[in-house]
Image 1: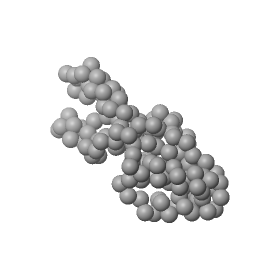
Image 2: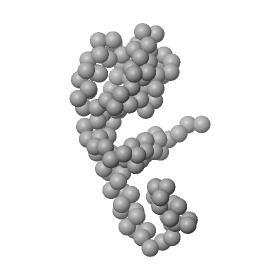
Image 3: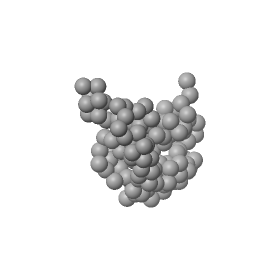
Length: 136
């Protein structure tokens, strides 16, 4: 089953924005495609040592399958330099995660304002607390 990109991206952004009050301004998602065993091993090493500076949205799994990595702005140059040195094909997939999170939050706030007063709407993401309150 293929998941549409927009749905996947929205889900990832919602999970980021809901789980923590972190500012993702300047964070970039890099799409890399390992074409050799050594390239795949490098990405796999990064995946196994994931920190708050690197977050794999699509982890390395096999050669010629893309890997999406959210990169903290302070680590961006280092990551790109390493990918370039290892001849790993890569590109910026999302230029500013923080801006996408802000846009999604604005869209949710607007929809909530439009649906205010109704018992529950199915067009918006609701936190666990909101759902239990509305069902309670």
